[in-house]
Image 1: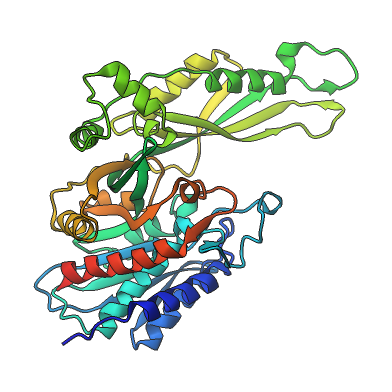
Image 2 (image 1 turned 135 degrees about the vertical axis):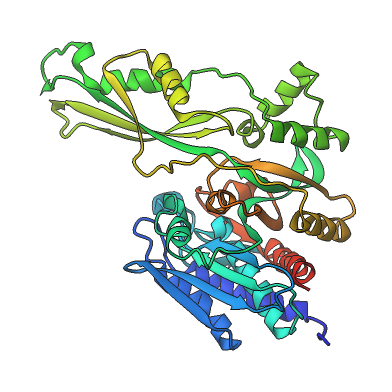
Amino acid sequence: MASAIGWPEVHAEALDVFVRYLRIDTSNPPGNEAEAARFLGGPLEAEGIACEYIETQPGREVLVARLTGDGSKRPLMLCNHTDVVPVEPRYWDMPAFEGLVRDGRVYGRGAVDMKGMGVMQLMAFVLAKRQALPLKRDLVFCAVPDEEALGGWGMKWLCEHRPDVVDVEFELNEGGSGSGEFQGRAARIFSVATNEKQVCWMRLTAVGTPGHGSYPHPVEQNSAVRLARAVQRLAEWERPLVVTPQMRHYVAELHEAGYLPPIEDSEAFEEAVRRSPALLACFMNTLNVTTLDSGIRPNVIPAKSEATIDCRLLPGQSRDEWREQVLAVIDDPQVEVTFHELLDDDEPAEVPWDTELYRTIEAVLKEAMEDAVVVPSLTAGGTDNRFLRLRGIPAYGFAPCILSPEERAGFHGNNEFLTIENLNLGCELTYEIVRRMCT
């Protein structure tokens, strides 16, 4: 019989692991995630759990560990990524790779994206072993590299080269979470992502005629000016809302709970959606300029100027049709628009939410918080879930914690942090979801 869990001791253990994990710099590029994989494997090996380290590229490893069930149900995978996006240190108020604990917060690159969730999953996995849970299904822990660069050396590689690892019934990863407020009102709304937008990175290239910077030069021959005009037109492009079938269900659920006006009240609905950038991203294709590259010297008019734009397309949208729309808005035949070479060929696929895992998540949350509202949702960003969804696996994006707006701003932002309270809550809820799903 399992003994009672001493949660204060587990919380302290999780915090220690989290702080030390944040000190490992896995900025991608270059990644160097092997050190992180070995670090996460340490607590597992200390429990007598066998770990497999799969090299996908020099210095990059996938960690896989498994607790074997009786086979009466198919496996559940807890999956997370070990890489993080790079940091611009001069814009941080503290070092990004020290795991600084201050005022109930743990600061560091990767705190919310997604080393914190990795620790929640790790502790749930360790506790399943310590409690000797009578598992009906295998429980798989998987930590992968390269998610932040679209997964070519991580989950995509794993699906192509080690399909045995991803032969599971369900998977939990990033992509959704809880919120303590909605549209300025106190609320406990938990989004479980069952689909995500399609990544559509694009490159704009303008070519002109170089010349000496001291002489008058025709504006139409300056590649930097042509590119700037193109970028400005895209930034000013007004686009209508698009309601996909999945988001129609999302709105209906939140309308019933009293948080959103109905879609039929078009004016009020649009006002509510446009009030929140996070919500707006789920109702339109988004576009942001992310890099600019032009010129070689202050006194040389640039021959070529380039920009990259990060576009995320709603389900059912065509990349080729979107490119034609972008070209029409730019309206300049001397600006070329091409797709980024790292893009996947397949459009993300939606998976059902009427499943055992979704119902388990919902039950756990509503028992923990009576006022919890649980809704299936769309992830605005890209995740590794898309590779498993294409294999027909219900892969859900869900971190069981209540992120504040300040914590959400840490995703790829400065001064990223996760509260200790959220770390503790996430450890407890992840374990309970695992316990119910696997026993």
